[in-house]
Structures are given as structure tokens and as C-alpha cells.
Length: 330
Image (cartoon, rainbow, N blue to C red; front, side, top):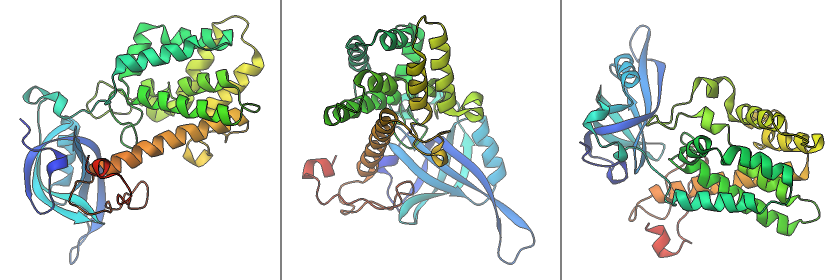
């Protein structure tokens, strides 16, 4: 059984506990005063309270094999710091069977009620005026198997909304931001198209991630194609089964999905080239970044100062001093 959660682990203490392996990678280094190179193992370990970076210098390859054997591992080691962040130096790592633990200890879920979020999603679809977009959305979300997969899926493996129900939560946040943009720019933005694009922009993630794996493993198709291509294929296939879908609407909707990451360097085949696509990209980006900011602040425990440790994804530390006291201590 698990004894102590990541959120309660302090720098300087010894650790002997069970963790979920979220990321793992073998690296080589030149050991001082030694011939040849040695291997070490980098890890991101976690539970339902958060994650911690870890490193293992001895027995790295065997430990990597143990991580391959089971995503759950018992780890012993010492907590120190590296680049202003807690880091666990691992002494030993052994696989643990799922039957020996409470799986809920290791997989987070959205704090929002998924039934309420599904009801909100259905209301959005019902409120559309464009019959083609409404029919397309219903072809997905009226399918019970698809809806369950969508409501269970994470929005990412680790960066934002990385928990059960995260995809649904992120999608609704993206729609909400899009609707605010429509109010600001009603002459330039198409409400129905933005709602549809926001609801569909990440559907490829139900094929990109294995939501039934504790650590949300990326599937073979996810590695080969990524969620942007998978999602555009799903939408294009659904449209092909509908009658009378306007070609221009097909082109703009698919462009919105393909360009929603904003840049080729971020995974989109093309950058946004329409107002609706541009709005969707920024709504998606803002929702993801706000969630990541929240996660960084949430991991920072009361009494640890007004600045968070340096976050490698944001490339900065965050300041809590201007937050209301009750939020800074959540």
C-alpha cells in the first residue's frame, strides 16, 4: 500500500514508497576517471497528488526494464534539489503488481462532475443553428462508445489537463473562450463554426492516448500520426458519411483542426490562415497554459515562499504574492 503522496514529500527526507512511472529515459555519461561511458535513468514519478523528477545512477538498465514490466514501482531513495526543483535520487526500483495497490491513489481525475460537463456539451450542440455542423457533432457525441471514451480521456500525458476527464474539461474551456471572442469580434467570427471546431479540435486524443493505462501511454497510432492528424481523419471520415455538407465548410473546419497548435514547430501542418482558425488556436493555447499555471501554483505548498521553483515547461518561476491568501494556500 502507498504510505506518502508526492505532495507531502519534503526535500531532505528518505523515501520508500510506490509510485507511477510517468516518463522514463536512459542516458549515457562519461564517469570521471573511468574508461568508457555509463548509463543513468531519468524518471518522472507520480501519484494522484502530483509528480516528482527522479534520477538513478546505478543499475539504470535493469531499473528501466523493471519500469517496462510494470508502470507501478517501489522506489527507495533520497530527496534533494536540482535546478531549484525537488529531485529524488533513486537507490532501488522494483516492479509492483496492480493488484497490490489502490489504483485510485495513482490516477487523477477532473475535479468537475463529468455528467454535468457532458450535459453542458449537449446543450452547446443543441444550440447550434447550422444543421450540417449540428449533424456532424451528433454523429460523434450521440455515439455512446465515443462519448464514454471522450469523457474518460486525458487532454495530455503530463503538460495540461493530464487526468481522467481532462479532455472533456479542456474542450469545454476552449469553447467558453471561443464564445467570449465571438462577443468581441462578431463581424469576423462564426459562432457555430468556432463551437464545432472547439468541440472537435482534440478528438484525435481518444486514439492518441490509452486512457485505460495508468500513465496514459501513447498508442502506436499516437506515435505514428499524433492527435491532429488522427482527429482530422476522424472528422473527414464522418463528413463523408453525411449528405450535402458544403465543401467550403469542410475546408475551413478541417483547417481549424489541422492548424490549432498554431505553428509547424508545435505540431500543426499549417499555421492558422482564417480568423476562426486563429481564434481557436489562441483559445486552445490559453486554456492549456492557464491549467498548467494552476498546476504549478497548486503544487507549491504553503510555507515554501512566494515563488515557485523554476518550471521547465514555462521556463520561469511563478509568483504567488498577489494571489488571495486562500488561493495561495490551496
